[in-house]
Length: 436
Ligand code: SDX
Image (tube, rainbow, N blue to C red; front, side, top):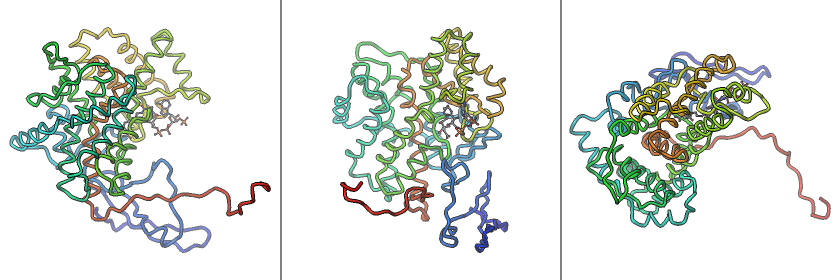
């Protein structure tokens, strides 16, 4: 962090003494005002529910410019990574700070491949779930359960433990997501095949079965890999902040990542792609394209809780760059599968067009986000809607780990413990039950 010679001076109209607050400049993006001494000097807290104006940390991993619609992983634009790299190269970039050269790529791939299997006991956790359990309920349980198997690598302050836990989590998430899917389908689990690429291995574990040869479709494998790349990290979003806060207590990396899985499940966050597809299904049931106007009316109605799922973003007040790339992938996949006349896709295109021209959305800077298209692509690939967020969690695991490791590696880090504005009852005495 570079401090700047500009200071912020805080003065109070009630005559309390003013104070100077240091300003720090990042390499790009907004400056920050360091308020760490504020409470000590003024006895006052800042107040920012939802953290709309709060930087919780300094980071070198991901940069988002919401107005320009820019997303950089370690300085590389997401468009260039999606075009020129695969997910494991992106994992290497996020974890270690740069793209791997050929030898590093081979080594990293080999290390991940040698950890793709899970302990055979893991399948007994699955048996405890109903077959119709939501995959995110299963994943929250399975990821947390991993910490029961790795007592050799749960000391988050040990860099060697952090490294092996990172590799294990990246390697095992596809296996666990595929197991959660197979369990709900009543099909046998498919073991990973380490001679396949990361995305191809996931497709194999998802869709192959022991009775016949599974033929990979390269367009779908590439689409899956791109979905992973686009969802890999996203600065201090809700689930990443959850992982950082959880990890700040010193808990093990598996438990911290399980907390991120739980937070990502919410429909306002990672659950939005499932919610977006369910929304398209609802409009379809209402009558399809002709009924979009009626649906939009519900969205605009302040008394209704209906939202245009897959639209809007806390940071992107312009088009989500991932949505553009996901839209491209949508066309590629639907073209490869001959589904361009897919009614849901046509409905999505019509809805996007109407929303982008409607002042209610334009004035609120509500543009399609990554989730709007990722659901359509995954549905076309054959992924059940309920599994979309589990796949988001699979991809985001590397981002969570990179952010967690960055925090733990920062000598200044301490346990996160926000304060509050208390508006509850003043102190009062307990009366005996007969006098209450
Ligand atoms: C992800 O943070 C990240 O980086 C997240 C993510 C990641 O990679 O980690 O990008 C992944 O979570 C993407 C977002 C997916 N969520 C959805 O698509 C759900 C639908 N979107 C909304 O829930 C909402 O847009 C949020 C939660 C994403 C953002 O909400 P904000 O920034 O808190 O905005 P807001 O709720 O204050 O909304 C501002 C206005 C409000 O209207 P007014 O009070 O001004 O009248 O816009 C309205 C909101 O009612 N609004 C919407 C809307 N989103 C906001 N109205 C209709 N449909 C929507 N989708």
